[in-house]
Length: 601
Ligand SMILES: [Fe+2]
Image 1 (spheres, rainbow, N blue to C red):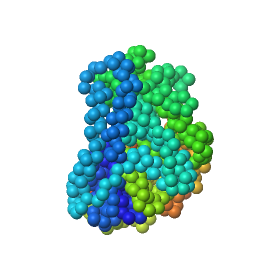
Image 2 (image 1 turned 180 degrees about the horizontal axis):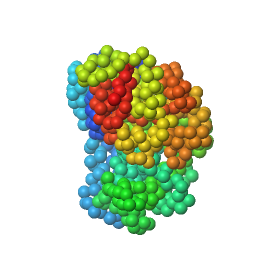
Image 3 (image 1 turned 30 degrees about the vertical axis):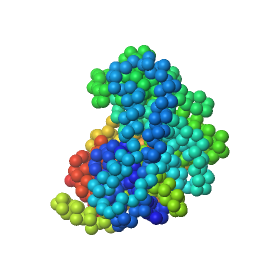
Image 4 (image 1 turned 135 degrees about the horizontal axis):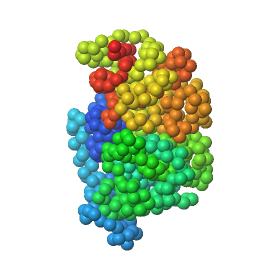
């Protein structure tokens, strides 16, 4: 049967098509709208892509699955808010309110109406029409959000038994879920509810540090590593432990710092948090977006001050402690040696690495689309399985987006009247350019889904050239200088660079680097000694494997620096025309696109 999975109207809208349980197309709306995140939108263009790819009319879709249970949402949320309000009402009345309209009751009612089932059904119908789809609207099924996350990771893993940890901001009233999977069944064993959200805790610290919450959490994770050397003198663990309290079996997030009270300074933290933080360090006021100060005579982003770096380290440390505690419970109490992870917090690859090393599990799998886009896939899996399909999709790659033939690429290049040459061996040609120290774009096959570019739409650089990282930052990506770059390497070479590798196909887990990597390829080793690698198998992506192997032959290192093909703050590019536009808008030296090579003189 044909099941169209959808997630929309929140963060990272996406659509996914399953045919007889097998994934055939998966697209995130931002790649088509070109608006980063496309938050709040219906995944109209992603739906249109999925059906066009399968040459399927709307009448061919048997069911639509939506990754949020709007049926249970209003009532569960009202119960949850009522219960939480009664539990904390004493503190609510004492909390300092700068803005009257930000009281929890108002927030509760607004949030409840937002995902009302009638409203969502109407939005989906409008979205399908906007996608140019005519005919009867297929039946729409709502599924539990965390179950959709859980399906998206377990049924994409290679395990037939596993513990599943789903962690996000919130899905309906749930924020964290521990489940156990056996064969084709997933059984939730414990849930945590609003306001006890690890996603909200990390988003609050993200916003406090002047980054965009629900978008820039990866920057906080990268920044946190800079505080590693001062970990023994860190002053923020104790105060932040009042916000996120962790014990041996559970954790709690105090809403007086995230929800209840005035929000004069931030949306995701209260004025109470500001009072508490500034009582420890009067200088540690909330950072405004883009705020700069003089550090050592140089105008620098304010979050680079030691106190904020240490704040980020403490937030990351507490998140890791909570996640490791939960993962350890799945291992010890439920006897699971394989762990699957999903949910927006699952994008934190440093946390995933600590889970692998500290929880006692033997194997780990993290869904590459751990944000809400992944629930489009998970929702479709739930409904397809309910109707008898086998939904196991062990993930060997993420190339389920649009692809373009050489003829289509040639037409696009000719239309732009730009010089190019046809090449027989793109891998050889790409490696030759990289060896010369050129930074190249690599556009091959179908576009990736998920947060990382993994060899479909990538920018690559030669790690053996001097100052590789600085060059890519200064000439192409314009990223913050302290953020790490990721390596892609042949699977055969992983032991040479990664200490104790496990699942490393998707850049979802941070690993300690080997001594040889630290000494020979420092550009891919973060300040805390970890790396976030992608290993390439020759049978999964022969072309990318060929390029990297050829780099090994030429430089002695079968590794390339791999970052997403886009410029800062834009989604990863999708089409040949976008590739041309991006190629000419920055300091890229060359591009291998299909069987064509472009070079700037
Ligand atoms: Fe989620």
